[in-house]
Amino acid sequence: MSYAALAGLFLIGPVLTTALALMLRRPSRRWWLLTGGTIAVLLVMTVLFDSLMIAVDLFRFEESLLLGWRIGLAPVEDLAWPLAAGLLLPSLWLLLTPERER
Image (cartoon, rainbow, N blue to C red; front, side):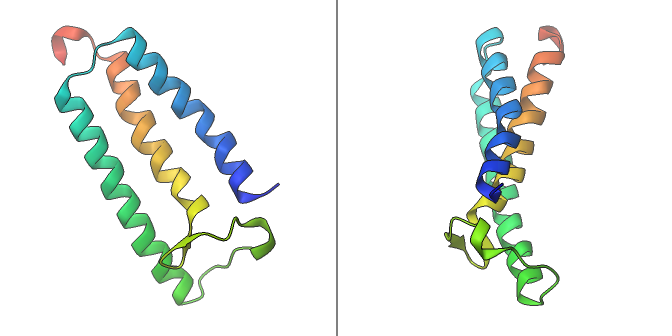
């Protein structure tokens, strides 16, 4: 299984949870800004730290399983994990927090 396929499978749950949260709750503009900002920070940190760890040879990726696109030294597939966290956690908060507490 390629890294892209694994990342795609992993993203199904967070994307469906986010879609459900958006259908059932009406997120505020502030929620969108905070969620987008969180995802942006997580993506930048992932690129920086993955590039650093790859540069010092802490780990390697099997090249034949990668798409080939890189940001810095980090393969693009590696950005699925922070994207999933950045979608899933705010969406769960939106779904599980009563309206009056938000």
